[in-house]
Image (cartoon, rainbow, N blue to C red; front, side, top):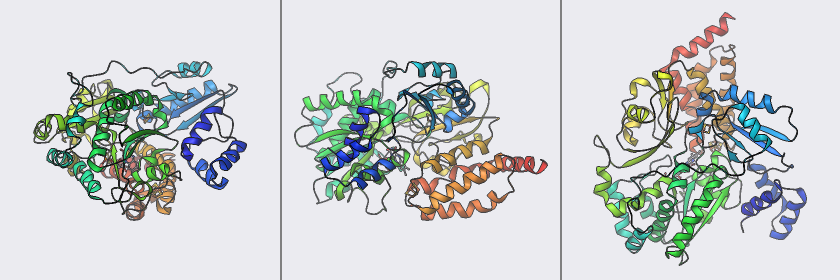
Length: 532
Ligand SMILES: Cc1cc2nc3c(=O)[nH]c(=O)nc-3n(C[C@H](O)[C@H](O)[C@H](O)COP(=O)(O)O)c2cc1C
Ligand code: SF4
Ligand code: FES
């Protein structure tokens, strides 16, 4: 058993990691105590003090902030302030941005409830997650209208070159953020001579506004598992992991059922196995090399790239890492063909996309749309802007994507189009902002998220985000002196050039986009400060 899995097990037993247990584990596993301590101290999920009777975690990030999370959280804290043995903590995005403001009570999600309800739940914590509403009909699910699940693997397992050619012809791109060509990634790993090889599903989804993977894991886990098995057949992998954020532990049930089915159908157990790895970490663990470090039982700090995981991944061996949605799309493409896939898009774009929509929309949720759907159309599907208001701004790809103004709502959802409009499709998360919002406060919230989640390995990312949050604190408190505007371009350039991973490289983009599109908002705050 891996070190982190063992620490997860020990913590599950008593709710925390006791010094004596760590010493015992150190001897039992023949791992120096300092190694255990360096791992325990890195991951926010591990605790070394006894847990309270009830732990309430409140999301402080983008979609929840926009839903009045600050005042809401303050009320929850006030209501529970005097409660013995109840701990209330602010945390990063819980992946429930569709039910903002979101909270968890003893690890069970309780979204969009009144503060009084959260306080009541803290008295008798719920034991189970709400079961999701009826499963929808997914166009990416080729078994939706019948057919034996996992039969696509049977038909394609021995046709590696054809799988690669079909994925390339379909133009399938990775849905985790970077948009790398999936067929090409699988081909590169297939060509690697080194063995053994591995397949990893990245289910760490932690970027504010992003929750599509959670819904896919709950509703179509069989497609994720079959996609992984197909990848394993193509590259010749022996082992696979689903790297799951611990706040999605409830998805273990559906995933284990899908793994069991795949085992009975012979996709697993004959040279390829899949395990679920519960991540004790935060947002940075979604970065593919940080994730590899965690699977290797180390602190989850990103590696320098190259080499890329395709050539030197887990334990230095060739590794396919794909996002949940990427794997889930593969079976449909193989069953129905690249031409069918391409024809699913509109306005000259190709394929389907699963998007999360949150923020100021009437029906936040996950929408399966043709590529090429406009942002405005997606907002309409999601119930339009709340309160009959007009759209002011939107982030098309989660918290790390640049904000665009409402006049860009005609942008077609597709990697190249969103990039040409000045942002990125990123993690597939549209966050809509209604008129009247203070964009500087919104940007402050986002930079603070990156500051909080920076792993600290690169000095410019660690101190640069801290510095900018400090300046924004001053500006929003009416004490800004305009320094921010002067130093931001240089800082942004420094972070982009010197950060070893995407977090630092894009951390200041959302703020820069706000200052570019709404320069008067900073002026307004500065004027307010000067008038005081
Ligand atoms: C800070 C950071 C966090 C990330 N988080 C995730 C994540 O939660 N899920 C994911 O699939 N990709 C995430 N990525 C992207 C991965 O590094 C990687 O590109 C992706 O898993 C590859 O899969 P794909 O080709 O299917 O997109 C993140 C990247 C960065 C820089
Ligand atoms: S850029 Fe930031 S998050 Fe990424 S490795 Fe460097 S310090 Fe860590
Ligand atoms: S759950 Fe709050 S921003 Fe995602």
